[in-house]
Structures are given as structure tokens and as C-alpha cells.
Amino acid sequence: MTHDTAERLASYRRTIDNLDSALLYILAERFRCTEQVGHLKANQAMPAIDHERERRQLDRLSSIANDVGLDQHFVEALMRMIVGAVVERHREIAAGK
Image (cartoon, rainbow, N blue to C red; front, side, top):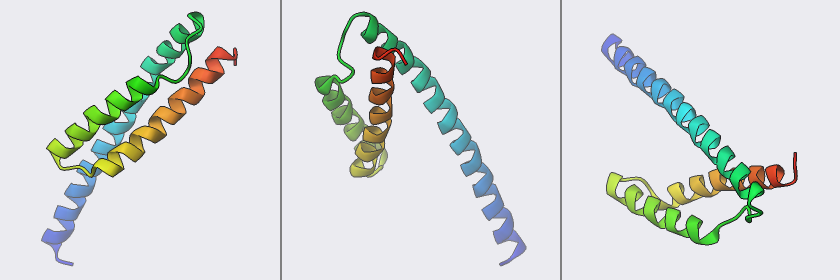
């Protein structure tokens, strides 16, 4: 590997590291917000799952994924994982845990 290639690779990796950090901060903020939703739902005896909301979100995010060149199946799988964690937390909140 040439010195130029090594420098370019290191630069790309620094950018990736920064983006990974940003993703985690954004996810943390998202979970802080959904925590509040969980408390509101528990206080109002609302169900942890809102299938219609989830479907609308998946449709919206699938469209965005298409616009920005991301694989729609990847985005859907990622969001199902995130929403699954949120729903589980909402159930814990409702159960008083």
C-alpha cells in the first residue's frame, strides 16, 4: 500500500468513525424521546404498539431510503429492530419496571 493510499484510507476511516459517533448520539436522543412517549402511553393506558404509526413510518422511511440510495430492506430491518427495542421499553414502563 502506498503512503497516499494509507492516508486516504485513514481519512475515510476517521470520517466513518465520526459518522458512527453521530449515529449513536442521534439514537440516544431518539430513545430519550421515545422514553417520554412510553411514559405518556403508560399514564394514558395506551398500548405499547401502534401498528398504523409503524406502517406509516416504514412507508415514509422507505421512500427516503429510495431517494438517498439506501436499500429499502436494510432500512426496514433497521427500523424494525429500533422499534422493537422501543416497544419492549414501553412495555417495561407500563409494567412499572
